[in-house]
Image (tube, one colour):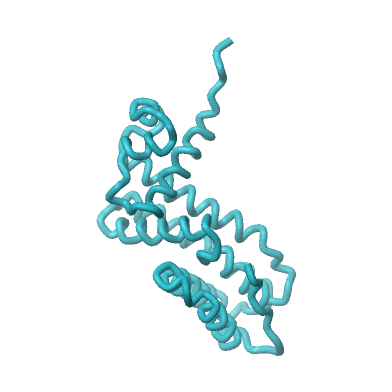
Length: 198
């Protein structure tokens, strides 16, 4: 019997390899040939799933957004608001190898999106989905008046910290402390959760 190929899984494997390649060597090193080599496939085998580099980049950008949204969905939003917000932001920060690769790819895609309408559309959609979900949750937590503005502030805080951690990883502890101070300013109240030592 012929072997059944899970097309979606094959595409995900290729997309994951592209993300790793972007993180390690930059976008200029990405091509059908280099991604094929990274996955142990021939260029022709990769082109069964993605005809061009742009198709691979578009899928990889979607995959990155999906991973971030999945981790955010796993956060316990029943925790006190500030602690839950902190946990949500931590899901987006490059505090381990996988998230560092994703953050590097996200930054690379964001720069490339300035000249690539397809990537720009994906970035906008992911941002909109996250902003809407965050604002809805903040409204339910009692911040009806400024939920959208607070959601934007949280996203900006996350983006800024992620960028700083990429090029100054040695300042991770300092930046996580800065996260606590920023959350104190955004959500005043008694006490704050400290970051886990990962």
